[in-house]
Image (cartoon, rainbow, N blue to C red; front, side):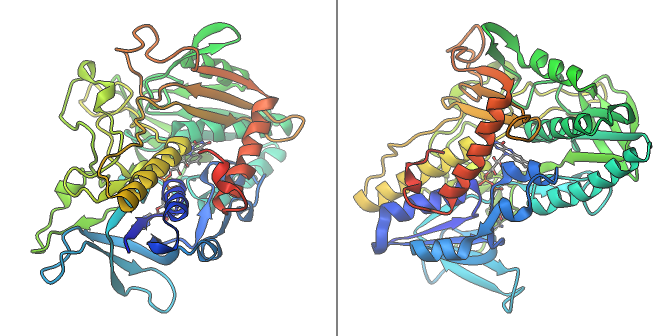
Amino acid sequence: MAKVLILGAGIAGHTSALIIKRRLGKNHEVEVISPNSNYQWVPSNIWVGMGLMTTDQVKFELFPVYEKLGIKFTQAMAVSIHPEGDRNSGKGYVTVRFVDGDLKDTEKHIEYDYLINATGPRLNFAATEGLGPDKFTESVCTFQHASHAWESLQKCFAKMDKGEHQRIVIGTGHPLATCQGAAFEYSLNIAFEIKKRKLDHLAELIWISNESELGDFGMGGAFIKRGGYITPTKIFAESIYKEYNFRWIMGAGVSKIEDGVIYYETLDGEYHTQEFDFAMLIPSFAGAGMKAFNKNEDDITSEIFVANGMMKVDADYTPKDFTDWKASDWPSIYQSPVYDNMYAAGIAFAVPHPISKPMKSKNGNPIYPTPPRTGMPSGVIGRIVAENVADRILTGSTQHKHKASMAKMGAACIISAGYGIRHGQAAVMTVFPIVNDWEKYPKWGRDISYTVGEIGLAGHWMKLFMHYMFLYKAKALPFWWMIPE
Ligand SMILES: Cc1cc2nc3c(=O)[nH]c(=O)nc-3n(C[C@H](O)[C@H](O)[C@H](O)COP(=O)(O)OP(=O)(O)OC[C@H]3O[C@@H](n4cnc5c(N)ncnc54)[C@H](O)[C@@H]3O)c2cc1C
């Protein structure tokens, strides 16, 4: 009997768990470790942050689902990986720390034959002084944060109702933050709501971001087909923001927040401040912060993880100039180069380099977006890792038949810009591939026939449909496995 241990029950880890258990059946053991007893459909946190969905609509308890499927669930936090086991046993294990209940603060060793690290991003608010919901800014990265953001936003609306002017700032809270798409989506939802409430004259809407230009989204921007024309995402995003009366501050590395004030540096080397009444700024992302040790208990963390804590996989990490980046630098099977029974899925794997051109301010400080890894690639990577591990267990083959490079994979992104069956709106963008490939597609960097963007009501319906469809799948309800990632 083989034992597969999965760290993390988010989009990547949960997808892996469901698929691997379905493939392996009762003859092998699957265990999931996660500090959170809930599964949350993170993309819908935007709607929680607008009071349009309750936190219960975007999450559910994992225990019953895993019990039904015969997957063991341990609610704990993985703190270290021991791929060679200890001196007595050569079997790899993970040390977990309990974060809740009677066992709180105690530790346990859990052995594995195959390990899938799907611990996602650690929200690194501490990297920017004053950032985060327990300091001066809001976040929509978790359902708890989104719910807190909605409470603050309501206060803003109440002040506007009384005729008070409000300055609302949305964007990135660190010079190297990612996830611009989520912040952009939240900004459009706020603008839509302000328009609906006829409060436009009292709101100053500001976008602040480390992208060198609007519409970069951490993927170097894109050329999209729209209504028969080829448009850069810069124009696409600018036209939407013009319509909603936004001002945008680009190439901004936010370094510090004080009560109502954002401190930032721009690419031209100037230092500025921006005042706010409400600010939602995405923090930088880091890895889960796990350590790794060999059987002699030597610290091998730097062999397994890169400096920010993301796990090294089959990517080409050789430092290269922007002009030398290649699609083939990107990993396709997400296997550790050091221990072949370890994999990383979703945001937990270390990218070889950014997608957007790395920029530095005139003072030499890096200011650019790190690559986004949205739900679709996270789910797809979770699936292929699960399929390959299941193949290894069931057939003994060490071939990896299933591959999913972000330089060969497309992604669809639906950016809602207002809620409602009749009046809702969303910008739908599909890009293929996610990582631009200038060798294969010299003209546009991507396949222009699959890289498209439209805005309208249909996109909103699609986003709503996806919310219910992906939660249905995550709950492993009948025929869940027929739903793609
Ligand atoms: C507000 C917002 C909106 C978004 N909207 C979209 C969208 O519209 N479309 C889209 O495609 N993508 C969207 N994304 C991105 C998408 O949510 C992520 O790509 C996806 O959640 C990444 O999946 P993951 O499994 O790698 O990480 P996560 O979903 O974050 O899961 C990580 C898991 O690991 C667990 N974990 C953390 N540390 C440990 C540890 N030490 N030990 C064990 N477990 C641990 C966590 O509790 C969690 O269960 C959005 C993101 C945000 C923040």
